[in-house]
Image (tube, rainbow, N blue to C red; front, side, top):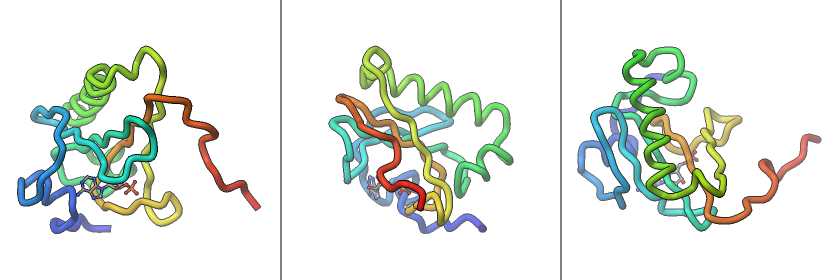
Length: 122
Ligand code: AMP
């Protein structure tokens, strides 16, 4: 799938849309989701144009990958989730339930999160 430059996160990166920013650097931007599923629910996105987890894992440079995941650690500490635990999720593609086609990681915490997947396999 080619990258859609009109997706919501691309527009946030271009500052065409607002976000509730947590922090950023050259490699990532972190902000709160508009639909929190936990007491703390943040999103971390790379600055580069990657559609999903597989695109990022396969095509990002080492600098982009290291910078992004160091950013995830930074956000986790800013939100004080590293002491009590958290969940790190990336939905990918149709079966993964991805809604926004710009790679992102969800960080959820601030309380017990329950089981990882609500729907059991038939
Ligand atoms: P996913 O289903 O993994 O693609 O997750 C997309 C996430 O982006 C969901 O948590 C949405 O609520 C969130 N989201 C969508 N639009 C915005 C927005 N304008 N600002 C912040 N979060 C958003």
